[in-house]
Each structure stands twice: as structure tokens, then as C-alpha cells.
Length: 107
Image: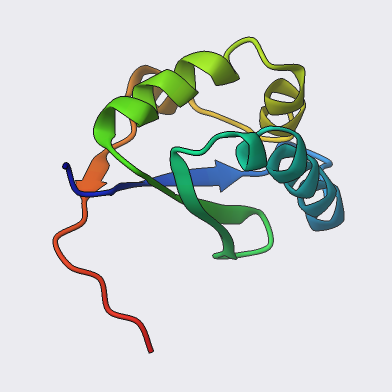
């Protein structure tokens, strides 16, 4: 069995998009897409600044990351969520790093 993996997906809001809009789209993305994908173990949206956020997503294994990214390309709820974000050419060309869990501690 492989260890879970985590991706850290940076989010920069597109011009004119509010945090409230991001939160609504994030909730819809969660309920209509993420909750139906058993390989997604955990997801957390965190705030860096008024326009920058980080979506932290833990998957059961590395192969699942690629399968989900493929599904996201054609899913309307995913596309609506991503449409609220601004991406540079460099960000679009670079794959997200994948981090393998070595150990997990809970409080």
C-alpha cells in the first residue's frame, strides 16, 4: 500500500472576484465533485492574503492525483471554481509538486 500524497494548489483570485464568491464556489466544488471522489482523503482551503489562498488536498496515492486532474478538465463545477482564479503562464506550464506523507500526527 502506498502512502497518501498531498498537493498544495496556490489560488490567486481573478480581478474583481471576492472571497465570498470563492467560498461559495469552493463549497459547490466540494459537494458536487470532491465528495464523490473516494481517493480524496482531505481538503482544506487556507488564506494567505486578501487575494491569495492555498487549497491543500490529500489523496490516497499519487496515481489518484493524475486521475482527478484529468476529470477536473471536463467537469463544469471544477471549471466554474477554477474560473475565479488567475494563473500566470508559468503556473499553467508547471505541474503542481506532489508531497508524499511520511508520518501523520493528530492532536
